[in-house]
Length: 432
Image 1 (cartoon, rainbow, N blue to C red):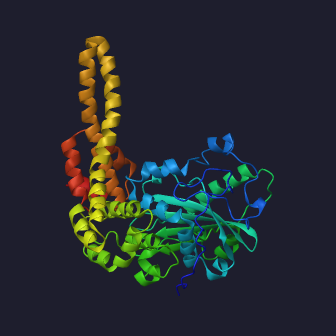
Image 2: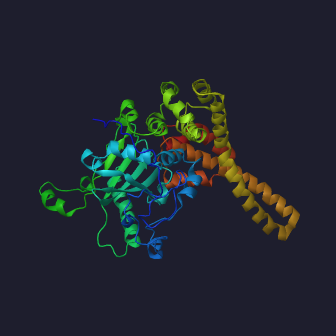
């Protein structure tokens, strides 16, 4: 039974917290001083980055969320959408109130909710996962809530083990920042997913162990459990999502994540969401918000094009919305090649100088620039192909990734990009 909408305090979009020893504010919300209801002991025991020993062990990847968001916003549209929406604490509170068990949600002081800095998932999964860490008070005690967004079309069978690893990193960070603490705060794990056939993965560590029936009762008390909460959008109705106490952009994000891959009915759904789209468009950051939604649609949905999105959105909003669509489409086209050209020019100049010492500086630099441009084109197309795989929810093995990034033939990469638009898996792109 869905929770009824809850009116939240208008100034709930507040600062990044100091639970884990960071003082960097989240760039997506205005930084203001925390409300006076926050007790002084709520922050970390010491400020500054985690200790070098923790960093050296790879337990924490210190990062400013501003830089991280900027670096992935265009290549990983799901990450940009997830962070834009759920870095705003009113949206985060509305989402968590809807998915946490009522006996917990009703006892959390939602005005104490804070966004903590850093992320904890594995580097190689950056294209298919995003995460955020929050802290809040429950009956006066500190609580941490780790939210992982799984951008895959099928469930991850080892999710409990993966979450166990990530929460260990959160715990190690806590210990590093609170050396005098003797206990950890409770940690909840929430997975936001939009699978095509529903979430069927194990819901706890216990389910991963191969336990003989006669030994299970004796072994289970001594095995790690880690039960998590999953919000599978494919199992929710649109009415349930619209009933959540979130901003128009927050609800639109959930609807986009739920229906973004629908090739047949997506444009019609946009017309049905006209009230939400107008609210997003007329908000203070309307152009940016619409741009993120458009970017997601263009990469996640094979049937979405600049032209049909513009034809749909302009009558619902105004002509300026068409400019946003065209701008985002052009940005996606140019992004991969621009990055590849930049890297190629640097490498080309270096190679040109080396060759120039032997064959002449002028000729060497010229050859270096030519080679750099060629390599830049190939790198740009490789980046675009991997972005398509990511947006369509394909699992990409290391072998496939290496094959794409090591290919220097532009024609071959163009052929793979064309196939990726209709293939059912990454492997199918190379089978033809």
